[in-house]
Image 1: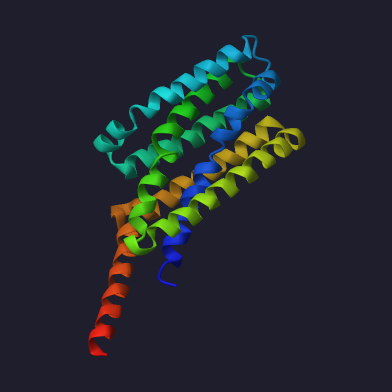
Image 2: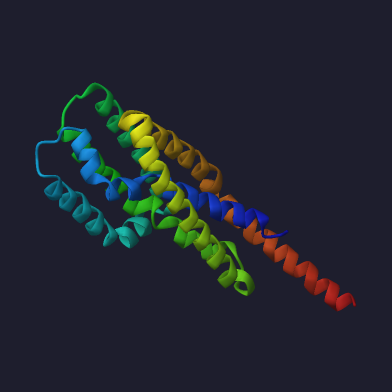
Length: 212
């Protein structure tokens, strides 16, 4: 029971990581570009989007080291919400075919520097060494489950309600991801509290052993 809070926080991180939608967007770029009436070759745009994401991976440690996880999570999640909202508006009112390319590049960049890596940084810190391996395996399986659900839902959503509403839903999810980050990262109280709970539990067990 002392690990319920840690598990819920970890699962929430993985939910927001997957339901940021970026992985589904990258896997369906051709379809998105086709529906957005983009004139340039979708393969060229796909390469550009992918390269930006790959380049940002090289900067993750530097960015998080300079800004801290809290600020990077805020920028990443809220930035994605804004970019996806812009994507949704463009899909509805057809402002410009270049906007989806710019938005998806920015979305991939923002995702790669924050929402993608930070859950994996936080996860090991939520559990003490005795259960860390089992907890990591369980949360990783949860991440895969969310990913599978995401890919299934994207096809259904894009066909049933269109790109505009689909992007809007993911934008709203990222707003909730931002709010989640406020509670978890505010003075790092969320992580520190879970660590304190574990320390208190371990101390109680040790005291019980001594008294016995």
